[in-house]
Image 1 (cartoon, helix red, strand yellow):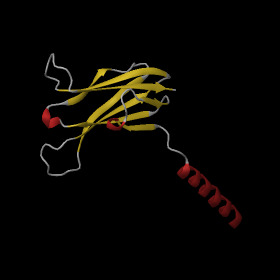
Image 2 (image 1 turned 135 degrees about the vertical axis):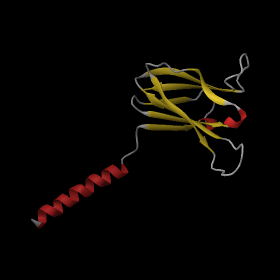
Image 3 (image 1 turned 45 degrees about the vertical axis):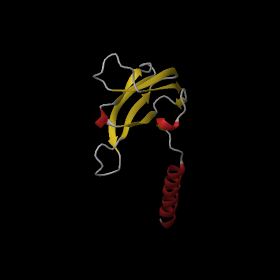
Length: 135
């Protein structure tokens, strides 16, 4: 009986150790300020792509999709504003976080525009273009 508990314990320990050192798959995170223009972002179907862009909504500016990726390949799950960690600083910027889900294999473009949504016929103050390769 003691032998059975010892083997069970070792098997459980082995499973736990393998899970602890297995590489994390499923999420691709990118700080968009650090990626060069026209950078290709590679993900696998089913993976989550998390994009972070500097933003300051107190100025009225926000990021939007200038050219949405192919909806058969990539789905926009959500986007949200994350304030900076500089507590108590009025008007301090933060980041917008865009969460995408890779659906199926293929190549598509992603264009992000930083603008004031109520201003018509005004060019974005910043535009970022990226390629998404889902494989």
